[in-house]
Length: 260
Image 1: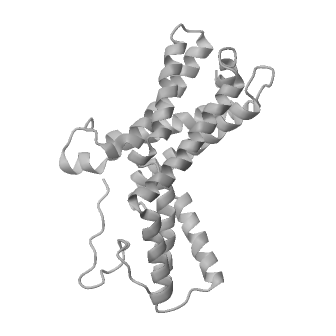
Image 2 (image 1 turned 90 degrees about the horizontal axis):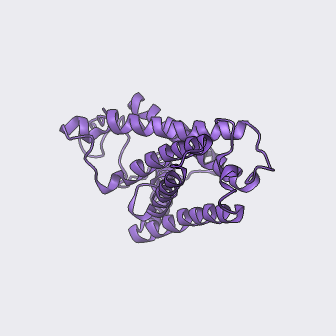
Image 3 (image 1 turned 90 degrees about the vertical axis):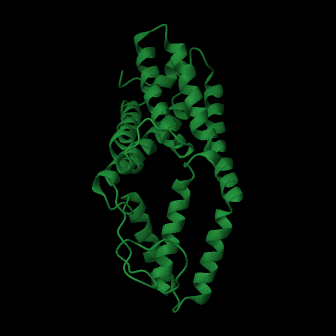
């Protein structure tokens, strides 16, 4: 099972061009949904205005070399989830993030490069696809049931769902249904088509609901982190949140956030 390309098995029912068109539509959903979210919330204008203000009113200029160093620092912080001070939350985020990247990248490769049985994929690619889907499930289950701040701090049920949870739940459902569908397909089960329908529906929800979920935050957070590091370097103070270890502008030190 773990060395079989589930999408080549699907080619007996669905032409490869249809599968590829579906993936292309999901990519378009990501691009258009993110642009809509940025326009609707005016986040792009907000960051651009603060970036320009930081450049004009900062106490010192940041040179090209220093800017490159800031960009590298921001990239490393993003790749290691350095914004999380709680190690459990950080690890759960890393497991989910790299699982999602593995899952998405291998899906694109398998669908576009090896879509039929007469084009067998290297065994490593299906293995990585399954591993990515499993990591997505592990990371999201760990976060949902054991780390969610509002559940622990406020004593609320882990089954309480609000709109902000749409991304986490749709991602968890998509990863789980991917595994279920591929397992049923390899087993020749009569429930394969039903699982495939649910898998496709969860995919549409995950990528089509970007304007209403927190999916686009993965693009906003690096921009906000880069701007924050720039302001720290040139001495400009905006209304962006201060790091936990930095003193507040007019008063006592900020209380470190509590992540449970």
